[in-house]
Image (cartoon, rainbow, N blue to C red; front, side, top):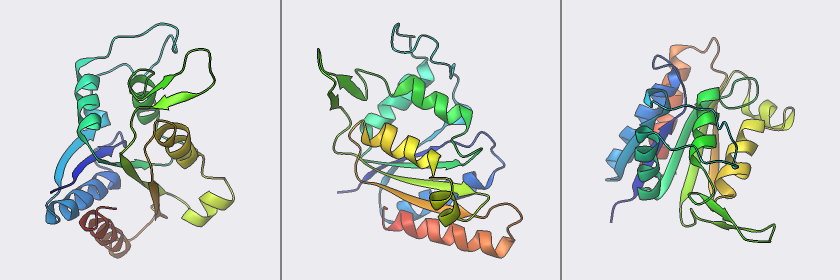
Length: 193
């Protein structure tokens, strides 16, 4: 039985290396006979501002409803994004804010500080690009984008395990190095990790 893979590309620029990474992962996963769907957040039409927080529900735009159907369908989510100022691109953060909502991704229990994780049974892999070595981002800066996406969002909603791969230093990288990174990502897709 083939695995259901959803590739979520959080880079707002179609000309970025992140789009090459997404294609490499898709190519590898296709070679392992996975069913693959994709979300390119930059192509979605939605307001990324969670204007009222959780006090008042803002209706989801059609593109977000379609994205949510893909997330529900998937067994494994592959998140691809750059690190900007230590965090996620604004459009990716807005996507999370608007879509990973109470009643969708999690549900607070009445009169309790506990919650139900509504996305249990799914796994994820974060592939993030950096303009610094991954070890430096992790140990010096504390990897804030990973903490936000992995711990504060995905695991909070029940998605586990969540693996992380760092790719970088992207700035000033040469063609040969980028080719090696793409081969590595393609092999991750073949192994469905």
